Image 1 (cartoon, rainbow, N blue to C red):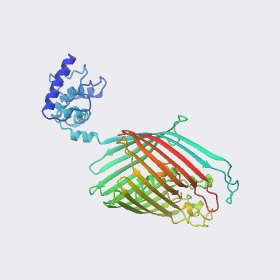
Image 2 (spheres, one colour):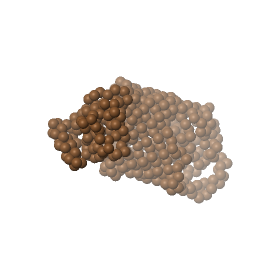
Image 3 (cartoon, rainbow, N blue to C red):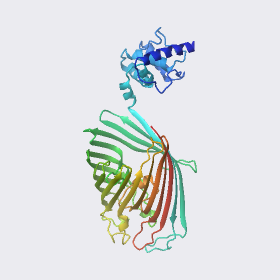
Image 4 (cartoon, one colour):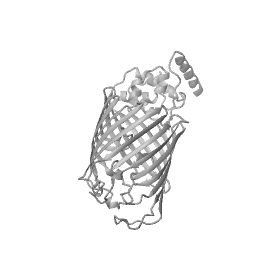
Length: 457
C-alpha cells in the first residue's frame, strides 16, 4: 500500500514537472515526514478549522506518516482558500517548510520564502593556535625605575571559537545585525573568561540606492580610509555614511577600552591606561575601494580618562589624523599603506622624555590574490611592515586577525588557502621588536598564528 502511494505520487510529480515547473528540489520529495514533526499538529489544527482537506476524502490520516510531497499537496490546496489570522500564520509556516515541494507543484511561494528569510543565520567555527616569544634580557634597573628579569618569555594560545551572526529583515530599508561569540580553551577544556560575548547589535538603514547608510546601536566599524589600521571593532552610538564613488563616514558614540590590554612591557599594569569607557568621534573620507588607485583621510577624537596621562597627553583627549594610499597594480597584485598620528602626546610632558614612536602608527602591505571561502583552491599571500604605536590606534585589524600587537614594529608574512567549500586555512608570522621610549633597548618579539575557519551560511 505504501509503495502504491509513492508510485502514484511519483506519477503526479512527473506530470506536473513535464508541464514546465522548476527543477527537482534538493530534498527527497518522497521522504517521510517524521512522526514527531510539528507539521502534523499544524495539519490537524488546519483540518479542524476546515482549511486542510487532507487526501480529498475529508481526512488527513494523522495515524500514518506522510511524505513531504503529500504534505505539500495538502498545503497547496489549502493556500487557495486564503486563510486568515492564526490559520494564515500557520499556513505561512507550513509553506516555508515545504517550499521546495510546492515549487515543484508550480505553487508560487516567493512572498512566503521572503517572510521565512526575515531572520538569517550565518557564522563560523574557528580553531586558532598562537605561539609567541618575547625577549626579556634587559637591565634589571632601567632609567624609569622598572624591574625586569633576565631570560625569555614564551607563551602559547590554543583556542576554539564559535560565532553566530543573526541578521533580521525589518522592512524594505532597515535590517538588524548581531553577533554572538563563544571562546573555549582547547588545552584546559574550559571556557575562556570572555566567553560568551554578545558583541554586536545594531539596526542599519539603507537609502538612495545604498549610497546613504545609517547605523544605530553597538555597531561593528572597520576604518576604510586606512585599511582598518585605526579600528576593527565595535562602538556604541550612531554612524552615517554618504556618497557613491567618494564616501564620507561620520561616527559618534562610546568606546569600551577594556577591549584593549595595552601590550607594553615597560609599563606596570597600574600605568597602562584607564579601562573606562570613553567618547569617540570620527570622520573618514575615501574613494571606492575597487578603484585602481585608492585613497582616504581621517580624523578621530578619543576622550578617555586616565588612558593617556601616563604618556604625557595634554588633558584627556587625543586627536588623531590619518591617511591611506593604495594601488592595484594588477587585478591580483596590490600595494597599500596607511599612517596615523596622535597630535596630543608631546615629549617631556609625561613619565617618558621621548615617546614619539608611540604616537605614530603605520603599515604597508604587498598582497597577491585572495582566498575565498566559497572557492576551493583559491589562495592569497602577503608581506608587510607594521609600526603599531599604541597611542595612535584602537583595537585594529592586526590585533584581531594576526599575531601582531599594539607596541610592535617589524615584518609580517602570511598566506591563506581554501581547503574545501567553507573551510579556510591561514598562517601568519611576525618578526620584529617592541617600540620603546628613547634611550631604552628595543627587545625582540616574534609570533606565529595558524588557524582554520569553518564557515556556514
